[in-house]
Image (cartoon, rainbow, N blue to C red; front, side):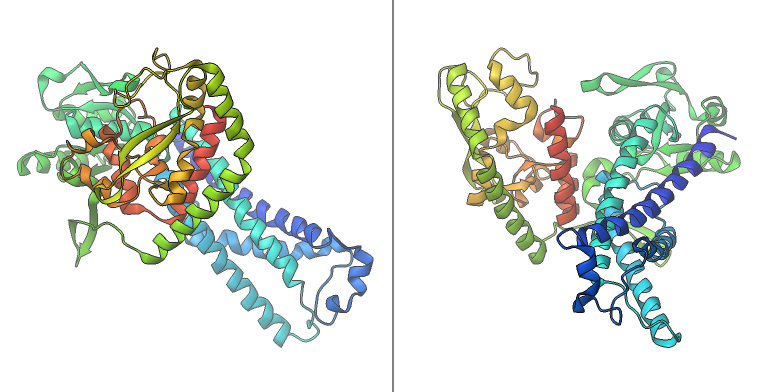
Length: 485
């Protein structure tokens, strides 16, 4: 039995325990919140809490039997929805959405069963406090999501060390194979750990192929496909990812037959990957898988809610942080000569230029449109500017851009005009939405590279955008800022 076969069941069991425990504890806190502002003896005799209408436990901890019933039901619904299997969506947005939906389903089933019980079973005419139940459910959803976020971080750390992750061989050391290796290394949520390349070009055998130059990551080319089974056994690989966009039909037929004969699990990276993989969607056409391109989302309700969130959060942030913003402005004045704010022309949605505001982090003599510093040791950056850039506090003035409607809190970063002039058709997809203060690119490991060189993240966001994805990105950005990353 492998380490993965031992660890995975333990991790899934831990998820079950966390979900049930959160629901159980949430009912305790829901009860405490309800009686936070009133004496309990007074509340019991209040007409609003008549025993004929509400169940006020005596002793008070007896209400946890309700928590136990709902907790078990939540676990069963989550198991049915396969929420105890590894989620591979970026930032786990799909997982969080299904957590909320599953909890609502569990609550509906629980209430339906409970009201049926008190209606048809003699001697059970009492109801529990709906307010306590509402408090407990709210705390449960928030707690389950926080618990899963913490659990995912622990699982990331284990996957980075190869614990619990599936060991993967990548068949093809070309551009597509390197891109796949890079993506798997960036997102441990996939639970796939690349251990080497297989390539049919003999000259590449026993060489190191760099798949992430910025972080100096590389993998060895173990050999050609003729020794596929031997390499799978030697590397204890669980899976083979076939990344050969230009392979012939005969070559693919041979590879598939080798995998089937050796009982090797395999997956294909389609040949549209290099063209527009960020925009592809797979459908089932009566048993035939077809791949097409999807259009940019134009959901009116989402856009309205996104704008409302932008206005409310940016206004609150400016009001709450006004004293802190004043302190930063004074510190910039004292640190070096020049203006407090750096005003730059950037290109927004639909190619419309606007004036973007930032705190000045470089010396005043530096030209506005020189290349952006990629390292904190760049001599053009001031002493205070290094700290502002590391914590992303130099972006605070862009909250004004958000209020004006030039930008959003979440979206692709706005680029300078001369860079946008060099955009190809794929890059121009970025201009279909409002630029943002933060986004997927800021949460990635590729921030050392230019924005337009990381089009993958922006295109993924554009075609998967949702209010929940925006919230998850905002929360993770705040944590990264506090950690100084």
